[in-house]
Amino acid sequence: MIRIESKRNKFTYNIYHIVKAFYPGEEVEQKVDAQQESLVTLHMPGDSSFSVLPEEIGLPVIQDPDERQLQTEKWAVTRRVYQYLAERNKSGLAWGILTGVRPTKLIMQKIETGGGREDILRSFQEDFVSREKAELAYEIASREHEILSRLDCTEGFSLYVGIPFCPSVCSYCSFSSSPIDQWRDRVDAYLDALVKEIRALGKMTAGRTPDTVYIGGGTPTTLEPEQLDRLLGTITECFDLGRTLEFTIEAGRPDSITEEKLRVIRNYPVTRISVNPQTMQQKTLDLVGRRHTVEDVENAFHMARKLGFDNINMDLIAGLPGETAADMRDTLAKVEALHPDSLTVHALAIKRAAKFGQEGRTAQLHSEISRMVEDASACARRMGLKPYYLYRQKNIAGNFENVGYAEVDKAGIYNILIMEEKQTILAAGAGASTKILLREPIREESGKEIGIVRIENVKNITDYINRIDEMIERKYRDGISLWRGEDVR
Ligand code: SF4
Image (tube, rainbow, N blue to C red; front, side, top):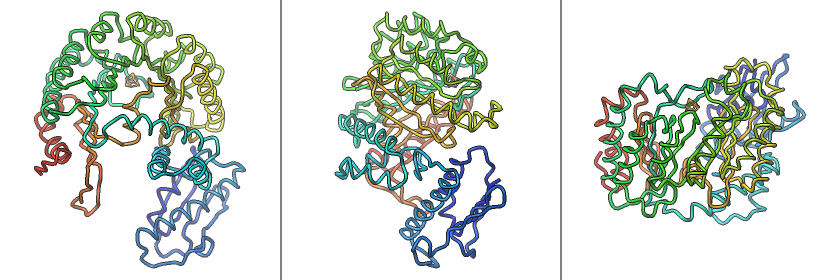
């Protein structure tokens, strides 16, 4: 157990996440005491402790510091704690003191304000980020910046449509998804509600074109061909897709893909699909409840290629239960033989590793996953794919990042938009989250200024069906009306 005592509430988030990144398997307890002398004290296992005193960071102790002073103190304390933990562990963290999930967002801001490459890399290294990670983040942010310059980020928007059903629920799943067999008799009712919401969004955005459309979930291809046809038909009828840059549908699970469904999709202007193996190891697929074979993945991929899909993404997860770096190498060899147009490599979050009873293997997992992630990166680059988006999960095993690689001009633009929060995303479906980027920040009742309004649809499928009118009305009242400059709240 590690105990953290902080003088200010403001320090707790950073210090907790830095400690957790160094000691992912350790229980961490926190307390705040405004009267304590030290800014932060860590009580480490084995009775040793470490304190950061005000004089050590060279800042005067101010009784009621303003926000600016608090920020300065917070980062000075974070740096000092990081240095202590890095010395104690004889090794630092690849991402240094950066605790946020979107390190590329920081670089993007610097690029937008005219920052040069070397200055940006130097500032990352001052935060103890390794040169390698700083260069990776810079490469990705520059690519994202170029891709986003093709979009209208103020007036434009993207559309997300969620299908919350899957053939079976994978044991590591972090999404809200239900097995389709339990919902067969209600899928049409779900589609009725979804179609109603899509039509309403079409009317609310009349005159504007979505830059990207993304149908995700869940697994959209769990829908029957005629249901897919109805969904895709509604989207194309309600929105002008003439200038849409990307239209993705996740075909995700190969056990949901049939030639008939792919033919339906080909009838619409879909530009990109995902066929996701996660691993090409049969023992792991069986263990995590994927209920399909390695051959199913290969057959689905070949079928999609034969039908003319020229932008196919594949997702892999590093660190699935029982997998070694050798398993990952074998998976990568099989994926390389298929040669997808983009590859997304996720690292299994430590929370889920714990679910598989692997919490005791943290150190071993760390080095295995580290090798897997490096091998996946090398494989992607061998296939000519370049990194184009990156995010870090909280509590991800070993503080790793998830990276998307793609051929030039086949990057998933919607993925970038989600990560960088650069455009309004209107979302339909159970659990779908709409994100409205405001032209001018507004002040909430609490007095806090916000530039993004988030509106979540209910997750429960039955509630979504029953309360669809309320979902639509709320989306307009609390978000879309602000975006359109017609505040009706
Ligand atoms: S296919 Fe994806 S969304 Fe569906 S259960 Fe598995 S991990 Fe979750």
